Length: 216
Image (tube, rainbow, N blue to C red; front, side, top):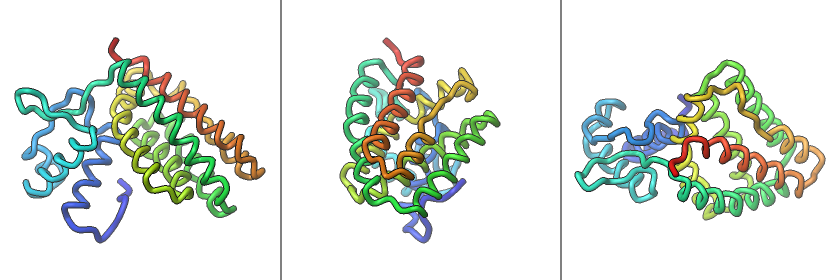
Protein backbone atom coordinates (compact mmCIF):
# COMPACT_ATOMS: atom_id res chain seq x y z
CA UNK A 1 0.00 0.00 0.00
CA UNK A 2 1.21 3.47 -0.82
CA UNK A 3 0.94 5.75 2.18
CA UNK A 4 -0.80 9.05 1.54
CA UNK A 5 1.48 10.87 3.96
CA UNK A 6 4.43 10.21 6.23
CA UNK A 7 5.51 11.44 9.68
CA UNK A 8 1.97 12.39 10.68
CA UNK A 9 0.56 12.05 14.21
CA UNK A 10 -0.68 8.52 14.88
CA UNK A 11 -4.36 9.45 14.89
CA UNK A 12 -3.97 11.11 11.46
CA UNK A 13 -2.05 8.15 10.04
CA UNK A 14 -4.71 5.73 11.27
CA UNK A 15 -7.49 7.91 9.89
CA UNK A 16 -5.81 7.92 6.47
CA UNK A 17 -5.30 4.15 6.61
CA UNK A 18 -8.98 3.54 7.33
CA UNK A 19 -9.92 6.10 4.68
CA UNK A 20 -7.91 4.13 2.12
CA UNK A 21 -9.62 0.92 3.21
CA UNK A 22 -12.96 2.51 2.35
CA UNK A 23 -11.79 4.28 -0.81
CA UNK A 24 -10.26 1.15 -2.27
CA UNK A 25 -12.99 -1.29 -1.28
CA UNK A 26 -11.36 -3.21 1.57
CA UNK A 27 -14.58 -2.59 3.50
CA UNK A 28 -17.72 -3.33 1.49
CA UNK A 29 -21.24 -1.91 1.93
CA UNK A 30 -23.10 -3.55 4.81
CA UNK A 31 -19.94 -4.93 6.40
CA UNK A 32 -19.87 -4.13 10.14
CA UNK A 33 -16.97 -2.07 11.42
CA UNK A 34 -16.05 -2.25 15.10
CA UNK A 35 -13.50 -0.21 16.98
CA UNK A 36 -11.71 -3.26 18.34
CA UNK A 37 -11.88 -5.13 15.03
CA UNK A 38 -10.47 -2.15 13.19
CA UNK A 39 -7.73 -1.64 15.76
CA UNK A 40 -6.70 -5.30 15.45
CA UNK A 41 -6.82 -5.24 11.64
CA UNK A 42 -4.43 -2.32 11.29
CA UNK A 43 -2.39 -2.86 14.42
CA UNK A 44 -3.29 0.23 16.40
CA UNK A 45 -4.87 1.21 19.69
CA UNK A 46 -8.56 1.66 20.41
CA UNK A 47 -8.38 5.46 20.77
CA UNK A 48 -7.04 6.30 17.25
CA UNK A 49 -9.40 3.68 15.74
CA UNK A 50 -12.35 5.30 17.52
CA UNK A 51 -11.29 8.75 16.30
CA UNK A 52 -10.96 7.48 12.70
CA UNK A 53 -14.45 6.00 12.84
CA UNK A 54 -15.83 9.23 14.30
CA UNK A 55 -14.32 11.36 11.54
CA UNK A 56 -15.37 9.04 8.73
CA UNK A 57 -18.90 8.83 10.10
CA UNK A 58 -19.05 12.65 10.10
CA UNK A 59 -17.91 12.58 6.46
CA UNK A 60 -20.66 10.13 5.50
CA UNK A 61 -18.30 7.26 4.64
CA UNK A 62 -19.66 5.25 7.58
CA UNK A 63 -23.10 5.21 9.21
CA UNK A 64 -24.35 4.20 12.66
CA UNK A 65 -27.48 2.06 12.70
CA UNK A 66 -30.14 1.93 15.42
CA UNK A 67 -28.40 -0.97 17.15
CA UNK A 68 -25.16 1.11 17.18
CA UNK A 69 -23.78 -1.05 14.41
CA UNK A 70 -21.30 0.88 12.26
CA UNK A 71 -20.98 0.05 8.58
CA UNK A 72 -20.36 1.37 5.09
CA UNK A 73 -23.80 2.38 3.79
CA UNK A 74 -25.27 0.51 0.84
CA UNK A 75 -25.70 2.51 -2.33
CA UNK A 76 -29.19 3.40 -3.52
CA UNK A 77 -30.28 4.87 -6.83
CA UNK A 78 -31.41 8.05 -5.06
CA UNK A 79 -28.05 8.56 -3.33
CA UNK A 80 -26.21 7.75 -6.55
CA UNK A 81 -28.13 10.39 -8.50
CA UNK A 82 -27.19 13.03 -5.92
CA UNK A 83 -23.53 11.99 -5.89
CA UNK A 84 -23.39 12.08 -9.68
CA UNK A 85 -24.94 15.55 -9.81
CA UNK A 86 -22.35 16.99 -7.43
CA UNK A 87 -19.42 15.11 -8.96
CA UNK A 88 -20.29 16.41 -12.42
CA UNK A 89 -20.35 19.93 -10.99
CA UNK A 90 -17.21 19.82 -8.84
CA UNK A 91 -14.73 17.52 -10.58
CA UNK A 92 -14.84 18.91 -14.13
CA UNK A 93 -14.40 22.37 -12.55
CA UNK A 94 -11.31 21.11 -10.74
CA UNK A 95 -9.99 19.61 -13.98
CA UNK A 96 -10.63 22.85 -15.86
CA UNK A 97 -8.69 24.90 -13.30
CA UNK A 98 -5.93 22.30 -13.06
CA UNK A 99 -5.46 22.32 -16.84
CA UNK A 100 -4.49 25.98 -16.69
CA UNK A 101 -1.66 25.18 -14.25
CA UNK A 102 -0.50 21.83 -15.65
CA UNK A 103 3.16 21.49 -16.64
CA UNK A 104 4.82 18.85 -18.80
CA UNK A 105 6.13 17.10 -15.69
CA UNK A 106 2.59 16.91 -14.35
CA UNK A 107 1.32 15.40 -17.58
CA UNK A 108 4.15 12.86 -17.45
CA UNK A 109 3.03 11.84 -13.96
CA UNK A 110 -0.59 11.60 -15.03
CA UNK A 111 0.42 9.36 -17.94
CA UNK A 112 2.41 7.18 -15.54
CA UNK A 113 -0.59 6.84 -13.24
CA UNK A 114 -2.85 6.07 -16.21
CA UNK A 115 -0.41 3.32 -17.14
CA UNK A 116 -0.93 1.81 -13.69
CA UNK A 117 -4.68 1.97 -14.25
CA UNK A 118 -4.34 0.11 -17.58
CA UNK A 119 -2.01 -2.49 -16.06
CA UNK A 120 -4.44 -3.16 -13.20
CA UNK A 121 -7.37 -3.51 -15.61
CA UNK A 122 -5.49 -6.02 -17.76
CA UNK A 123 -4.40 -8.01 -14.69
CA UNK A 124 -7.86 -8.03 -13.14
CA UNK A 125 -6.37 -6.29 -10.09
CA UNK A 126 -9.39 -4.55 -8.58
CA UNK A 127 -7.58 -3.05 -5.59
CA UNK A 128 -4.79 -1.81 -7.86
CA UNK A 129 -7.30 -0.31 -10.27
CA UNK A 130 -9.21 1.55 -7.57
CA UNK A 131 -6.07 3.03 -6.10
CA UNK A 132 -4.44 4.02 -9.41
CA UNK A 133 -7.71 5.55 -10.62
CA UNK A 134 -7.95 7.59 -7.42
CA UNK A 135 -4.32 8.71 -7.65
CA UNK A 136 -4.81 9.85 -11.25
CA UNK A 137 -7.85 11.98 -10.49
CA UNK A 138 -6.56 13.52 -7.31
CA UNK A 139 -3.13 14.29 -8.71
CA UNK A 140 -4.95 16.28 -11.40
CA UNK A 141 -7.36 17.89 -8.93
CA UNK A 142 -4.46 18.83 -6.66
CA UNK A 143 -3.06 21.02 -9.43
CA UNK A 144 -6.15 23.22 -9.20
CA UNK A 145 -5.17 24.55 -5.76
CA UNK A 146 -8.85 24.58 -4.75
CA UNK A 147 -8.91 22.92 -1.35
CA UNK A 148 -12.64 23.29 -0.67
CA UNK A 149 -13.64 21.70 -3.96
CA UNK A 150 -11.03 18.97 -3.55
CA UNK A 151 -12.39 18.06 -0.12
CA UNK A 152 -15.90 17.85 -1.52
CA UNK A 153 -14.62 15.52 -4.24
CA UNK A 154 -12.81 13.33 -1.69
CA UNK A 155 -15.97 13.00 0.39
CA UNK A 156 -17.92 11.87 -2.67
CA UNK A 157 -15.22 9.34 -3.60
CA UNK A 158 -15.43 7.90 -0.08
CA UNK A 159 -19.13 7.32 -0.66
CA UNK A 160 -18.73 5.75 -4.10
CA UNK A 161 -15.54 3.68 -3.67
CA UNK A 162 -17.03 0.67 -1.85
CA UNK A 163 -19.81 0.33 -4.43
CA UNK A 164 -17.33 0.48 -7.29
CA UNK A 165 -15.42 -2.32 -5.57
CA UNK A 166 -18.61 -4.40 -5.45
CA UNK A 167 -19.42 -3.96 -9.13
CA UNK A 168 -15.80 -4.68 -10.13
CA UNK A 169 -15.93 -7.83 -8.03
CA UNK A 170 -19.15 -8.88 -9.72
CA UNK A 171 -18.21 -8.13 -13.33
CA UNK A 172 -14.41 -7.94 -13.24
CA UNK A 173 -12.23 -5.24 -14.76
CA UNK A 174 -12.26 -6.36 -18.39
CA UNK A 175 -15.11 -4.02 -19.36
CA UNK A 176 -13.78 -0.97 -17.59
CA UNK A 177 -13.20 1.99 -19.90
CA UNK A 178 -11.71 5.27 -18.77
CA UNK A 179 -11.15 8.59 -20.46
CA UNK A 180 -7.77 9.33 -18.91
CA UNK A 181 -5.90 9.21 -22.19
CA UNK A 182 -8.31 11.68 -23.73
CA UNK A 183 -7.66 13.94 -20.74
CA UNK A 184 -3.87 13.73 -20.97
CA UNK A 185 -3.92 14.24 -24.74
CA UNK A 186 -6.04 17.35 -24.25
CA UNK A 187 -3.61 18.57 -21.61
CA UNK A 188 -0.70 18.10 -24.04
CA UNK A 189 -2.54 20.30 -26.54
CA UNK A 190 -3.46 22.90 -23.93
CA UNK A 191 -7.12 22.23 -24.71
CA UNK A 192 -8.86 23.12 -21.44
CA UNK A 193 -12.49 22.46 -22.56
CA UNK A 194 -11.52 19.01 -23.90
CA UNK A 195 -9.79 18.18 -20.61
CA UNK A 196 -12.88 19.18 -18.68
CA UNK A 197 -15.15 17.11 -20.94
CA UNK A 198 -12.89 14.04 -20.75
CA UNK A 199 -13.09 14.07 -16.96
CA UNK A 200 -16.85 14.60 -17.06
CA UNK A 201 -17.27 11.65 -19.42
CA UNK A 202 -15.03 9.53 -17.20
CA UNK A 203 -17.30 10.31 -14.25
CA UNK A 204 -20.44 9.46 -16.22
CA UNK A 205 -18.98 6.12 -17.30
CA UNK A 206 -17.97 5.23 -13.77
CA UNK A 207 -21.31 6.20 -12.28
CA UNK A 208 -23.18 4.16 -14.90
CA UNK A 209 -21.00 1.21 -13.92
CA UNK A 210 -21.87 1.62 -10.22
CA UNK A 211 -25.55 2.06 -11.06
CA UNK A 212 -25.67 -1.66 -11.81
CA UNK A 213 -25.38 -2.37 -8.07
CA UNK A 214 -27.59 0.41 -6.68
CA UNK A 215 -30.80 -0.55 -4.94
CA UNK A 216 -34.03 0.81 -6.29
